[in-house]
Length: 117
Image (cartoon, rainbow, N blue to C red; front, side, top):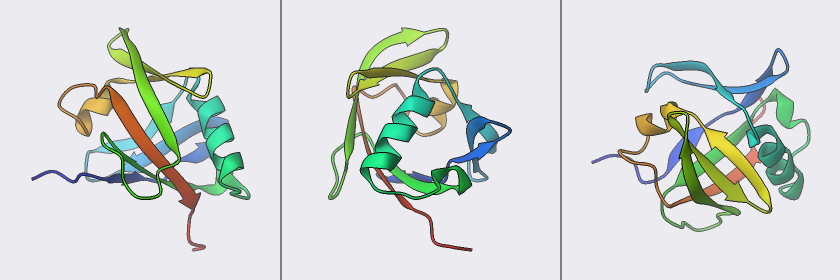
């Protein structure tokens, strides 16, 4: 059975928001086209200082305790999928299918500060 709540740790690299996930083979996977704005809104609302150094993002297709953002599916676009939250649209590339078999109608997200390393 696959995890119900997935975890990634986005960080800013060369001016681009990216994340690594060795369990899926993703390295420096970019979050673009509206996602940087969503990241900025979510981390600001969560009071995360210096999110560019990395923060933890938990996400699931179903609600879970403490979720903070509900991304709603809008449309398929260029092999990826567009989601909206808080008046902002953001594009998630086909790497989404490393986590979900099909693009979910909803993605629930919680962001939190990463433990200091």
